[in-house]
Image (tube, rainbow, N blue to C red):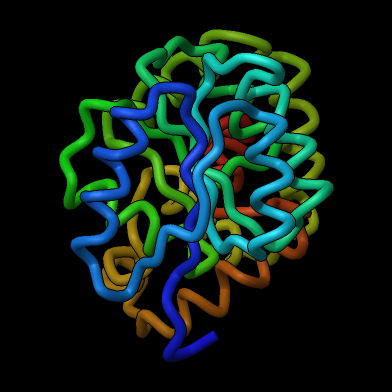
Length: 219
């Protein structure tokens, strides 16, 4: 809600890591860390109990690891946006994060300003991948599961209008709404409206999923 801080849950099994993340986020007056969790099960409970806007989720944790906790989080706290923040940037980790509806994927060497920006983006309903992770995902997806994914993707985008397909193609290039607007000679607000319509038609939770679909469809 406007005027209220972004409510964040930090889930990591290392207390020092949690303390460092808390310190970074607390430097932004519009972000409030409402709870910490030491494992995936606690993360699910904390997100639900505190009505978290954003959950920062480590992968390697006891009881329930982050990637297993992610789908449970999406069910138990559907309004919470989940960003995976990890040391392990392997392809499979990134893919599973996105397939389970994660709103972002960051490595723990991310700069503090980028972490804050990712939290803000997720809270605003957008998705955030670090540039390196974005390139990694697009390159690996292009190499794997191509035939079945491409066929499915082409079928899904077939129902889009020509202009919607143009906007989707620019999402696939990683362009922001502002940059896409310049390319298409549209206002940023108009592009945002198109993006919302595209996400609804394609049943995508965020623009990252739509961008991957655009690449799979060959746009």
